[in-house]
Length: 363
Image 1: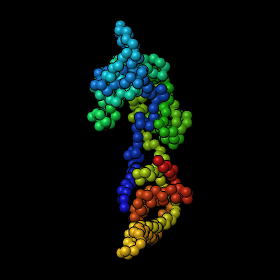
Image 2: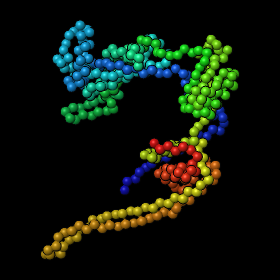
Image 3: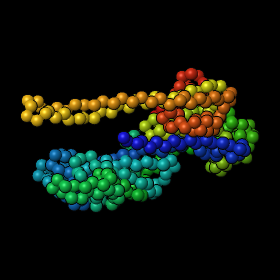
Image 4: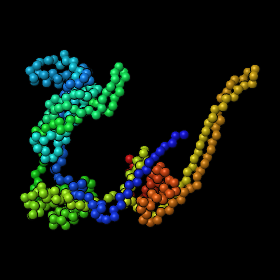
């Protein structure tokens, strides 16, 4: 019999004071237009120890031939058989307000059949944005988080040796497209919620005067105060330090594969009675051998013996009063010996019965 060990995690955020649950505005909103930008480029990695692309990867040989031609050497791509070169796709994230000369991290991944990029060096690769402009140039040695060892059919692979990283491996050549801070700022909520937007508006108006207005559940417009007319950056820095208690959604997240249950303190249970019992049916089959009598014409036969056992535990009765909290629910269910699978089933039944005042999400 296999025993399955399942763990249950109950997270309950209990705020004793209003300030204890307050969150900085920096974690709740983002400025309109202030965002990261994705960059991508195609390049070559050289210096590999025979772990590069094979002849089946045609574009790597063509890329190497084109590179040599730009350096004054004419070589046919069909005549190249170099196992020390691999074609890679290079990606990077350009942060907002990144200026020329700044360095950013780069990731390179093999696009051919190279088994490993260990020990390789990325040649100069232009990284382009969605508009086709080159915003950064990457080059340098890569850091590989894995390796390939062995050969002749006996190979050991650790992690992903076909993906490498270049810390600070790209230099920004063009400033990131970022908005200019003006007299009006637009704040985007990370999670749209009318109550949170109203609280943020109230906190900003209390701190800076009548400067904020909530357009909807996800957008807040803020006018620059007169005292910060020429200090937009200072105003944003001070505004991001304002603390607000965001409104939390009453939600239960259940991972049935791992038996994990996460519930917030806003979850409420309507008056309900829960009765649970376990019915166990066990069927065992044993094989017995029947031997014939000596000197008889009979043959040896295998006769299965089937035993059926049925056991039903006494029902467990749980009664929850009106306004019961998630803490009371957890304590009550665990006190009667419910396991994680039982609790998940009970939660689903409570939701179907309309007694669970929360959103139930199964992942």
